[in-house]
Image (cartoon, rainbow, N blue to C red; front, top):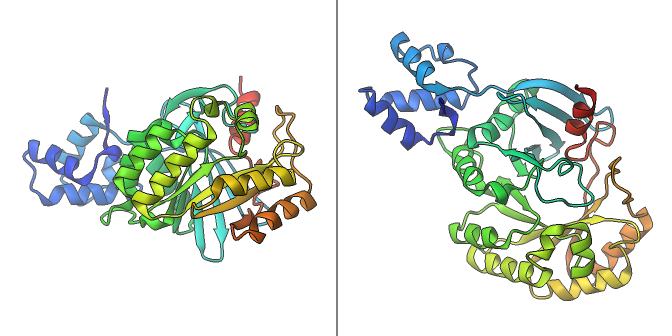
Length: 344
């Protein structure tokens, strides 16, 4: 089976080309072409034809295919459904803000985590994406849309820390000065709370933003909507977050989906304050997206505002996420799910 060439780091590519008896400068040429999103080795026009042929024989050059592209009439958000080389599909979302364009990428095909409010996890995990396939989501979104990408969030389909090694390799690739050169402070990684991997990520001291999907401050509620909590309860998760902050000095963002009559009471807000005490944090309240297969419903607007005020009155930074792409299956996994239903 051919190795994916786009998943190789520059140093690995250099070693591979040295073994082919190629001069040292060839590795940077190839790497540059890969990170421009070429669709075939023949497009690498400054390489000898013989080398292009050898590369094609030895390596797989991944090129995702656009299955569907939806553009929001409300805010210009673009949602892609990509078909990968094995026929599986993942979603990528391009969001436009005044500070630049953000791409939200998937890290897995499907998701094993089973969160009750998420369409991505319906059907479970199919497979993990390679580093090169994640890079493709950024590259080809930029190429297809014609919009420069300045920020990346790993918040699409899948749990990034369940695909830890490939995600770390992707981060190295997309941060590379010889590649897309996206700064770590412009990258956010979202996790539902895999504690050992949070602690491992802390040791790397990367300057990205860690976003923790908390969604409830008590074990009873969180375990009901997020099975991961049965393995790593709230207090253990927050202890890991405190360790992460101590190692990186990076404030953590806590994602909190507002679910009607589940986690949106004033009492719950006050418990959340107690749990976060002393931890530099930002709470991002998320209006829940309606998922056809889920009985959970979004909180009323007034309830969300009341929840926010309770947190802010005690000095906790709290924002309400701007809803984007509401007319284009905005929730992660919904477009893929709809496509699966329509495809025999």
